[in-house]
Image (cartoon, rainbow over the protein chains, first blue to last red):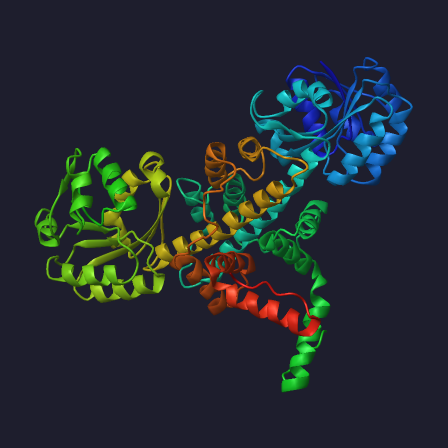
Length: 304
Length: 304
């Protein structure tokens, strides 16, 4: 078993490690020297300095190459460069968080050259190395079949935590919705803990409560496990800026709800709450403050 | 170890069983004959036909009596009746979903007679018998101390899944917020699965996807375990009415957010979504349809 990996960031590097520990020969490339160097000495991983070298080390017509790259241009640029290096029968796997329609387009384009394409939604974050990753795969049965042995090494178990979801795009669609659900769940926990924190008269130990809920409660989850862990280290969170980034998947899920005409208010609102945390509500808030001032003479705070 | 239990519904009966299996002598009462009969023959449980008999079988001044009753009048009526049967030093525990301010009021009132009161938020549902319950306890240290040995039998383990959260009311407050979080999480999953279901071109097997997500994904949780289980039995859900009841705790959480002035939009919206499912949006929807008809001449469907 031999697989190429392009992109050795937080996800890619750990996936390379897990594949190598599972017995696969891994040929790994990242355009950053430091990322390659960080992985260079590990058992079962050979790092190479370019895509040509990566393709040369894999058997022509049977190559399986996993891209762990940021969604968007990086994927298209890599596919362009790989075009001249791979051959019919090779399988390219996008394990990043690409928009599912991009994956459908890419799979179709590559199929013209006899290339197989798998869109692989991957969940598990930085803990995947130890626990295994959850993989949602899209593509033709033939394409997915080439990647299954590696999915079985990456997943928590050979028969658990991976799934061929459907045709090209279905893997990234499932991952997109997964992340939309994640936005809603995270917001629900955040609101609940904020309400507990604000109830000063009870002064509930939030770290202990999170730990308590982990055992037997209806809200137990892996996200709660993480909350219990970081609250135990610092329950005040005073040094954490109250700003939450968003990546593509929350936005795509909300847009998809609009396109399908299916309500997803909590997921959309969780996304909007992140925009708000990024300061994108500030102009609207100034508008509100001014309207109150104009109709009711209410005081307006001036910025210092 | 000897404990009285009042109320042998879904929660109370299983808690009686779990306590008895853990080695406690349980004296159990329900005003319904059938509920008593259902539990009557089990090892370690003695059912009695009234509160007087229940109190008579427990040692005066050391009684621990757990009420598993619906929130509201049932608790106050039971406390009124118990008033003449219990004595100073006895401990009364409300394991139901009472409003935390009611629990504060009751604890204060009972303390005038030297009675100890514990508000115990209990999570775990019908699976608690096997897995153990999560218990959030409020009350004075002395009161809670009386109940701890029983909490340790009810919880998943002697040192896990139970917590003395704070003074009277803190247990039911923690449980209220717990349920608010539960509303938000459930809505997030429901929206996500609805978006997957609506994407007909991918025809993703939702039961298999839920099962897949259970292993290694960021959205793994006990609620997801339940989704995987019922979707495997019937993924279409065609025979399930799209109506979702709500109980007090979601409403109280949303009201508390307003009282504290702390935003909890996702929890509040998840609650509103349940109201909507109950048909409580229908008048508003008719208003919208009529406004569109009046300004734009848009067609209005007539009810048959």
